[in-house]
Image 1 (cartoon, rainbow, N blue to C red):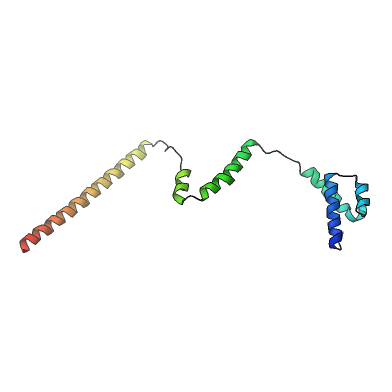
Image 2: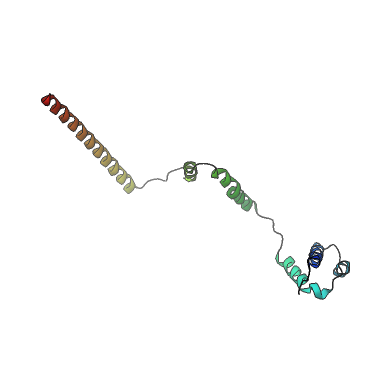
Length: 138
């Protein structure tokens, strides 16, 4: 099927809209738009196949809710800073720790305490030594 001009394209488009909507029988539409069946047979067959294939479906409430959350709530969060987005995505409750995790955390905490105390002791002893050296020099 070769479509030759823009006015004929518009005429065929209007015909197809009327045919799909079912405003009149096929023969009446062909007469109204001054078309022959041979000119539009492929388009009518395609339209019929699409009507059978594309059945109207009502979405479930769960789908509507998830789509709302995805589209609307994520847009609201997009204006927030990265920290609030990360904080909101973290689960509200920390899962319980195993005994191995508790032991490792305890060892890590003691190590930090020991290193901090040692560093502080080292800094204080250096400061005291510097003060003593200044007193001797003065």
